[in-house]
Image (cartoon, rainbow, N blue to C red):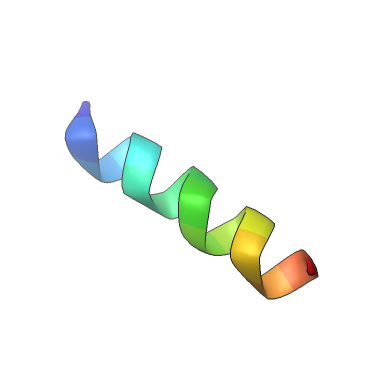
Length: 16
């Protein structure tokens, strides 16, 4: 579960 959250955070950060 935590891995999915971290992947979402990385995706959002890379988009910015």
